[in-house]
Image (tube, rainbow, N blue to C red; front, top):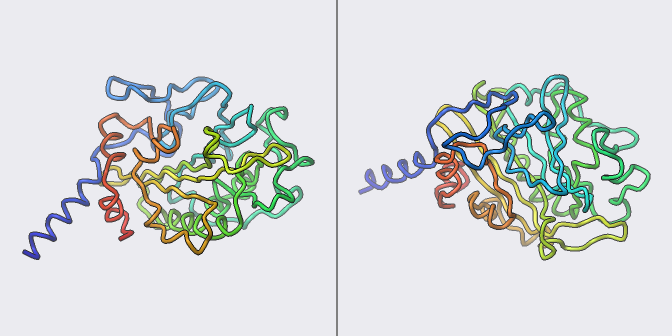
Length: 300
């Protein structure tokens, strides 16, 4: 009986991983939708990176895409709501070579620069930084610690457009724990074919998901999310995290208690994650039961 039970558990973990290969090789993917991918983003001259696997479905309307490069390499991208002056999400890749540590955390003046690639009318200026004196941290979405491969990559993570307001107990607590966990899934010793695709943000689309608005108009999300996709030699697996930052640190619980599947994360956020995967692969990795996800990512 023990042998049979072990066999079923192993089969459950294997079922999490959808076999297949990706045309996204840590560089720009410019493939649009095909017959097997009806919801993919369609790259354009001004948004040529949106076909990469870390991108969710682009919202459009008041939202614009900004992609930051370090030389010829894509560092990270954001979707910015120009009316609300708020980040909707930041997305980026992690693979062995951009996990190399060649620099240290940026400390400079200004500590949180304006985004040079964003129209100044759409963003807050350094002189009018709405985070100061609010009691909220400048919460990185693409973390500084994920971009120590070059001084320029690290500097770019401090742009105001990559920030969302986070309570310090949340930012330095379970959110930081999640960031460290994600970093542990890709290291300099990982296979050169392994890639992690990450999309993170705070909820700004629905008024009920906004905790408060500061006197300068800065939206403070009640909820934060992270969607992660792994591509390795076995295929793909995905995991979602969902947090209420207004819950006290002592009641946040374990990281495992915040795990959801991607389908649930899409219902909560209204964002279509990993839309550039083939439809059958996307459906498979996004709908798995939480207990199977915990087992596949070794969180149980």
